Every structure is written in C-alpha cells, then in structure tokens.
Image 1: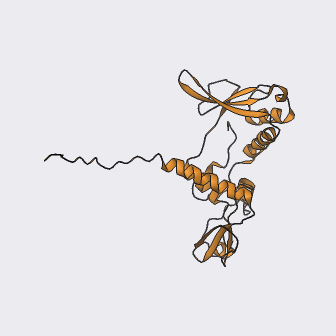
Image 2: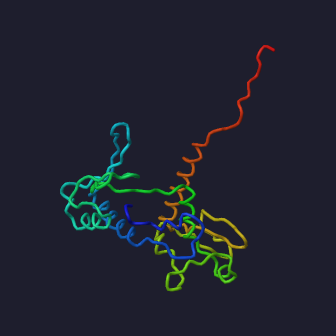
Image 3: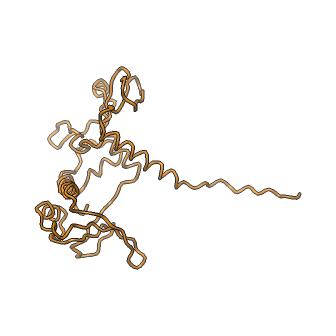
Length: 211
C-alpha cells in the first residue's frame, strides 16, 4: 500500500535476505483496529466506466488516533472520510492509496513461509534459510503472524482433518487452529474462482450432419 511493502520478495521462492514488511504491518495494525471498532467500510462504484474501490472512515471516527496513524503510515492526508484504493493513483492526490495485489501463485509462495520445516531437513540444507542483514536466521512468523501455521511431525497426527505426507514427514493444520483453517479455506475458494476462469482452447469439432 503506497510506499509500504508487504514482503514482495516472498511472492516467489524463499529469499535469502529478510523482506521489507514492518511499515506495512504497522499500517495494517491500525487498519485492523479501525475495522474492529466498526469505523471503516468499503464500497464500489464506477466513474466514467472506470471501477473504483473506496475506503470509508466514519465521520465521527476520522480523527481517531488510529485513523491519524494510518494516514501517516500511508502518507495520505489525515482527517478524510474517503480514500480511493487504486493501482494507479493520480499525481499529487492525497486521498488515494496505491494497492498492488499478489497473483494466486504469489499468495501461495507467501503462505508457504508458514510451513514448519523439519529441523533435519534444515540441517541437511534442503531448504533456503532466510537471514537478516546481521546474518541471523529470520523468523517468518513475523510476517505471516497467525494467518497460517502448517506444522510437521514424523508420525501421522490423529486429530487433524488436514494432513499430507511428503518426503517422510506429515504436514498438518491443528484442528484447534481456527485462524489457519479459515485462511486455508479462503485460499481454496480463491483457487476455485481462478480455476473457473480457465478457457477451453481445444479446437471446435463440427460434425457434418446429413452426410
């Protein structure tokens, strides 16, 4: 969003250097607090045939500290009740927020950082280890938070409804991890929507009826 980056390097194979994300995480924190308080909403409209998405902040909430901090983090004018979410903001427009989304593949790469790799695989160098600028191992939980957590065990978990066996290890979502199950469910829905857009490029077969 605007100049705040949400780990763009996580949209591909695991990077060797820690991503940029702290400014984005801070902005999202304020946005989430406003959402919990019922202070914001989204709406859609078209202007001259161009679709637009608007972020509304209630009149009585526009001067809340969270709203001010959000505006500061995104470098937009505080005290507004409406901000335009757009991919290409107009020059010098202080009520527009540039939003760049990930592709489905980028989302899957991003969420793959929530997989807990067996320590043995790490020791054998089978996975890329992301490091900070100081050379320390970077903890991807700082980025993914409680969005998703894929755990691993040498033996099959007994209670998890979501399990897969891969290269000698069982990977699973704990049955009590509601946040991870919600994220996985949403990912499945997005995948289904994307799959529904695939067009059949097979040649059209016509049958000469009557011959």
